[in-house]
Image (cartoon, rainbow over all chains, first blue to last red; front, side, top):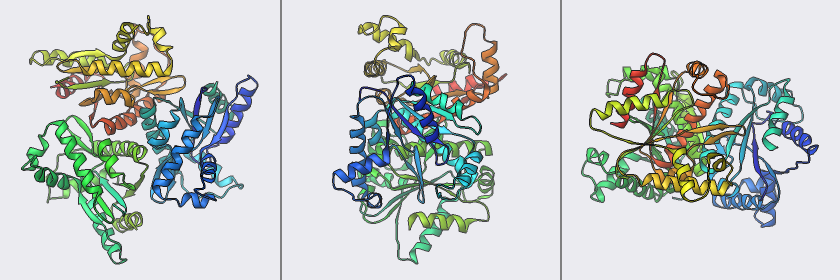
Length: 190
Length: 190
Length: 190
């Protein structure tokens, strides 16, 4: 990878994709382009290629060691992509057994990103966005719990920064201020 | 270690042992068992076996490098225990020179836990529990300071998760709701 | 380095230097001395010696890999200093692309500090101090943003502690209570 590597994260419902797409459109007009990679999708493609898993369910049920190796391989392959790369993933994932690091050490060492972005907003706004989004069924979670998840993401992002030397950028995607979020994202990618 | 490895942490007075014992009793009825290890005790036993320290005071006064080696050896021995292991320790310890990591990198790399649990509750409840516990003499600490310690534990737990890929589970042990905490702990261990 | 290594950090305007100087003066009377090193200055001197950069601007524009190597060399040289060492630096630096780790992994592994101090105070007090300090021109930043920066520093300090086993000490430098901050700092260095 000779271009820049920016990882974009955000809890479900914060509007990460909308902000990213807006920013990429803006940059397109300026002649700046990024290849967007979804970490989960990319990992699944590697799993299929290596004959490790046939579908996503199978991938989730892999033994811990194999999953780890798969994550590492996916990160290595991503790091070889040419030009600017934007990786869409989660700082952490909420599971029944607690928060799971989206970017564990062995993934970070391969990717060595320039910047990790946390798209955030007030937890109440996220709650309402989730409740009114009819295109997806999400686990029901209260405001308090969403806020806690965002706090965890800030903490783990700090650890990511220690490990890689990348910068950690908070971008607020507040109600009625999408344009501001898009501009902030474009400024990071520019 | 072929079973699961769960590390349980919590500031003094939060009721960690009560919650753990309740959960283990519950699981016992379901045929699930865990070997409970106390990190400090385990380390001391290793220190005695290796002829490094005769008592706990001597262990605390060891040179930094020797202490580090001892921690690593203890972690390696723990990782060799068969079956499910529950390790009782602290996410961080409050010392006169500040917070000390309970699970530094060289310990984590050996243990590679599945989950780290943070038993928590409102700092005022912890304060009252400490003041009314006549079986132990603890350093006097105000609510604000207890809250700060719990915050530090959340932050360092996020770093632990980055390093090992383990999940971080917060379990609340609130007044009058011990049964809920026990059930939550059992769910993690199940 | 056979003495102690203490790293002192704090956001601009918190009064870090005043607290450090007060503490060192106090300790001087007790026959305890520290060599104070500024990480940035030290790094620049190494850069000049190695012919990597002629001025600080050039140093900031170095390629990422070279900057990383330079940071590592500076840390290695600092670790070789005899006696007690106090390193003046930042837990994180606020840049247009987000927070940048002041002590990334490759620096920490060389320094392996005993303690990292975070000099802190209420964000409003810092704001006022910045606005009334006519000796320096600083970027204008609101209270909320200063508070956020201090929170990030606490989170990343926890990660530093996990990586090195150093203790993390918060020292409050509140208005009208400089003497208390100086005494707390002296206690850490003593």
